[in-house]
Image 1: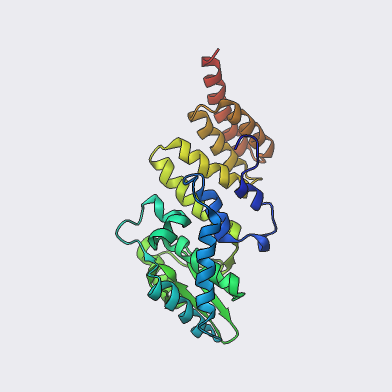
Image 2: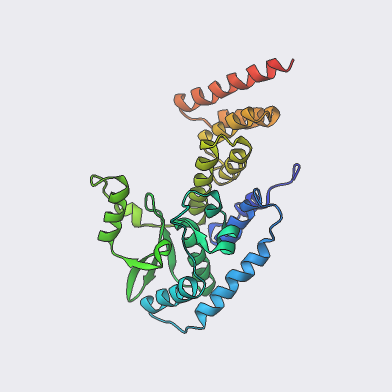
Length: 274
């Protein structure tokens, strides 16, 4: 894309309420699947919303059931239990194609349908397992899109998280606060970053970090990590720009020390070229 701004980065400059989560997810997926046409996938999501709307549901319970009926029962969207850590589960285009995903990408389907219908469905950023919640005047319902859209209580949420992190783990009220598109996108891209960096796939790690920096523009540590990985991939000029910007953003001695450490590595790599 040369010096042109990435479409994802451009969308992230909009107010939070103007960011369509599904569209933004498809834009960053183009870093991996450059041939996809986001409009085609958005049309398919639009079709889901029309079918859910046709159910004529009004109450919170009926609306959740309408979404479950269309998304889970009719379209067979489900959690990829057999191959959970497959990177494809994090790319919304592949989730729509295969009907398989992880909690956060399946939740994105539900959230997009609700957004189009102006229904009060929100993401819940629970550790280890993303959920959604319908906030209705007749009651709130916590829903697990990964597990056939089942409805959970706070107690069952606690048990689920404790099964992953131990009985000493306590869910706090902040875990049940709604999160917006930026936070959800950051978690999605964070998943990809972990998968790609663990595999030492530095070019793909760079893509994830570039998009994360677009979300967290003032985070010096995010910039420091991008600069470190750009150095590893040989993008030394880019790394210099990234790390010098991160150094200007650094507020603490620890942050400055981290950025300077990566700058030393970069200067060593540059000296090898001369």
